[in-house]
Length: 59
Image (cartoon, rainbow, N blue to C red; front, side):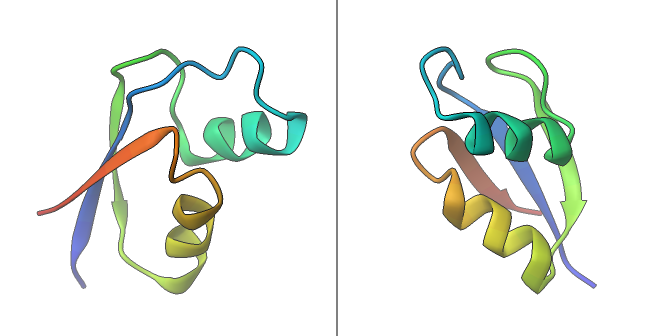
């Protein structure tokens, strides 16, 4: 399966609580932190929800 690299580029300060929990569930903690996840429908849905906060690269 393909993998994707997700980077938090914007702070979650001021974000709605649901978006903060989604960022946390993806494994992101601080601004500019990155995590590699499997590319599946669940992860893509989470990314779509917080697309204004993250940058996604395919590996």
